[in-house]
Image (cartoon, rainbow, N blue to C red; front, side):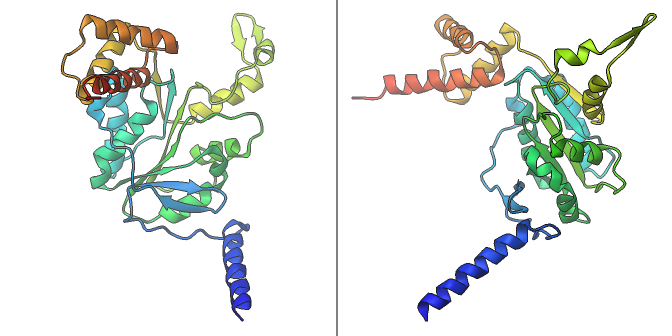
Length: 291
């Protein structure tokens, strides 16, 4: 009898999982009070709370004041119930694109902002997510990190339709914020540019080029990020050194070590500066620790 009960229990669990992924299955609403951040599970078509969301503040993000001001203004409009744009943050790696979205949640969570992280495979489930959040009082950012597409991926068409062109109205309490190292979200091939035509003094881009540009143009706000200058990089390194308890400031030896660190990593960015600060302060704590 125990074996039969065990069989029925496992069968019921299997059917429950199948119902979540079968076409037409409606996802269950999560506990919206469990967290301010959620992650969309494409396989199970369900939202899972992320209780331990990274605690980073807008004041911690240096060297991107203009980008920060523009996206904060857009987010403030959205949180306050006004009109706002979907946002594409593109450009140099490690310059704070993803951290900026996290900082916005920490800034505005108490005012009703929520973030749903989704990967590109889950974009085909946009209609399910819209159905879950529609009518709720919270304001939701659908967050796509490090987004890029190859040709003919299903998520590409789903995102393109959702941004502008779908017959079904997008929920007015939901925006899409995407980060990408690619300006047009898709790879650029030489053969695409070879098909560009010159008619008199005019340049007529190939249809493949126009198609790639069309997706990024559907984001109402397009914010670009650039590699840091040496001074910007050192300022960020000094900030994170102080954050981790370093009290001696950016002396010559520390400055030299920070620059050498960036040369080894082949990049001057906020991410690299933060990694240097962790390494330097970690070594310092070992040096003062008794054997």
